[in-house]
Image 1 (tube, rainbow, N blue to C red):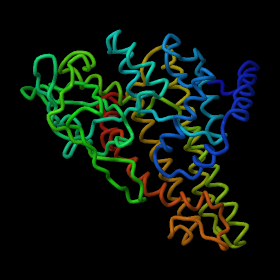
Image 2 (image 1 turned 135 degrees about the vertical axis):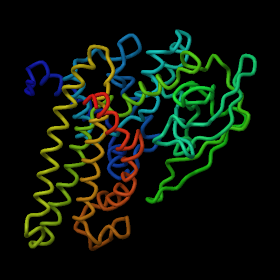
Image 3 (image 1 turned 180 degrees about the vertical axis):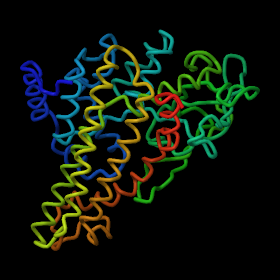
Image 4 (image 1 turned 45 degrees about the horizontal axis):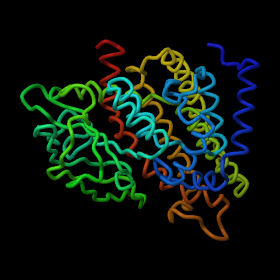
Length: 395
């Protein structure tokens, strides 16, 4: 694989850098640096999304007919990398990169016309209704019931760990429409308005003190059948397709590279403050291991994206990306906590005495705590290994 950029790609890189220098607001960069949650605040994400929409660069992964860019895989990689290195936030992927591909692949023409423009503009802000009490990694055990009633379904039950449900106006849900067969059968994929009568949201506060996830309750919620994606009882197939994009539909290596730069700055600051810091080289050895593994992840992502650029989906290789991305992020989190030591006890900056930048200190421990869940969300590590064993290794 040729990892050198040609002259046209270098010119594109300069175009992206100029755009970011002119259009990326400093207050968004600052807020992103301090963010310890999975996603930045909704208002900031939508502000940045609107800037990218105006430029025509919001959804490089989408087909051109729906607002995509027709970029090459290398251009997509360059854009992603430059955005992260400039401190831009990740756009909220729930609608843009998870639901939208499902609608494009399996939705009706009417659903495409109705939902895709509103996802792109930010008019619709979506959350994902997959996990339930007792049905997380074992997603096929879900029990949220949708019973037919004329042209509608009546939905009862709840969803758990629903990110940004308290901020969303719509939710895409897996629901149980038939219990007579295997667990994977009898699941359907529904689009539900969060303003519907009978929908309520209860907050769940994380260890880091954030309100990002929730439990969503459905009490006799009436949902039109036209809001179902594809065929009834075929939702498991659509759900697996969506999860491939959640786990491997974008670039993680540039984002982790940005986090690695923050870690290196922490190490530099610690060394300047304490000449005896890392005198045995343990920190540097761990840092080198992370850098080697990150380069391997980057090459794997480029190889997979090259295959996906032909119009396919990431496939089971997305589980390999999910495993390694999670491990690298957690390795960086753990090493960052080790570097700042007792300075992390307060989970906020220490006035007058800290050798570290306030935005680093305030987010290091919350990032560590929040990212413990990365081993579970999007499919647990055990689930990913089972997928790799079955579909990649043929075991």
